[in-house]
Length: 117
Image 1 (cartoon, rainbow, N blue to C red):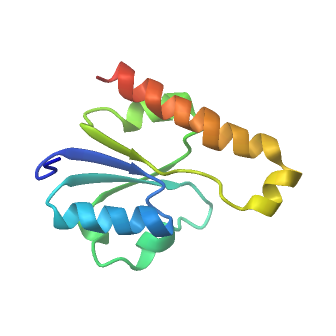
Image 2 (cartoon, helix red, strand yellow):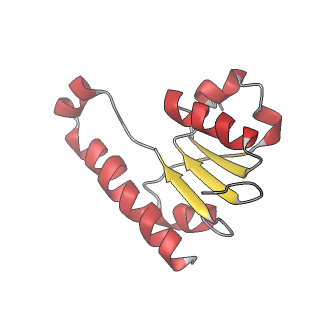
C-alpha cells in the first residue's frame, strides 16, 4: 500500500513497535497522527527520544473512551491499531483493565473508524 501523503493514525505509538512503525511511516512520507496513552508525566514513551518527534502530530488519550476515539480518527485514511496493555502477570490481578483496553479499546477504534468513513 502506498502511504505517501496519506493521513495515518498509529495507536500505541508510544510503545516499542508503535514508535518504530511511526518512524517508518514518516520515512515513507505519510502524514502521521500518533496516539500515546495519557499519563501525568506527559511522557510519549519511546517517542520521547525519537528523531522524528517534530514531524508527527502527537495526541495523548485513551482508546477506552469511545468519544475520544471518534475524534482521533477524524480525517484519517489508514489506522494501525497497536494500543494494548501487555504486562501478562498483572493481567491475572486486574483482568478488567485488560478487557477494557485490549478488547473494548479495539472495538472503540473500529467503530470510530467506520463512523468516520
